[in-house]
Length: 207
Image 1 (cartoon, rainbow, N blue to C red):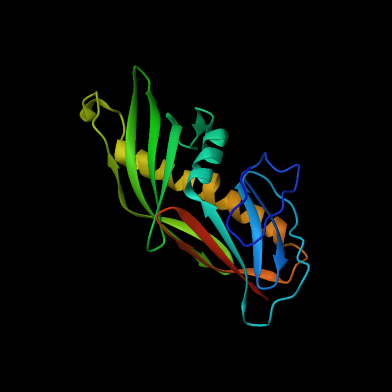
Image 2: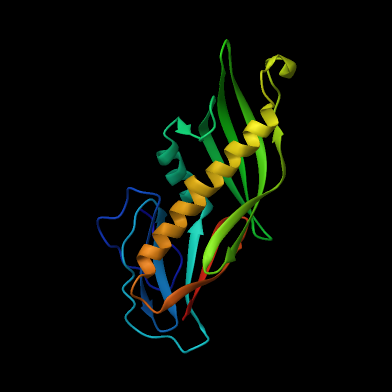
């Protein structure tokens, strides 16, 4: 598992599985943290930051998020919506707190079965110390190989509901649970989240 940005690094064995891990070493004013979205382990904070100052900056690379998401999906992830299975997901971090997605779905509608892709615009932010992600606008569906009026349901509505489920259960809920598990017993709390074209950055502050 690759360690992320910082002045010094340390590898801690035994990390991997679930949808996230967060660990690191605070030296001076910068804590180098290794993050995956698939496990949980407590953060060993060994020095205290000045009250009111940023204590920890966690940088999660887009490529790593996509790698771990692919492991979780494993070619078929239930979306909670009947007849709709997520088969692939590509996260695309952008500026202005955008964490967009390109998602591929398998649609099983009785005698009609086909694949469809969708482009989704998402905005990620923090609320009460937790990350939240909301879809902006409607999913942009790719070309379909079946007439949409043959479907016994509104495909766009189904995709929208599936995206809400994926946002809240595959990405945000797992990441929040991982973060909470790692921060338990520490004096750190999530302050803000921001994005760049290549990474997601979590800013933690002293409580």
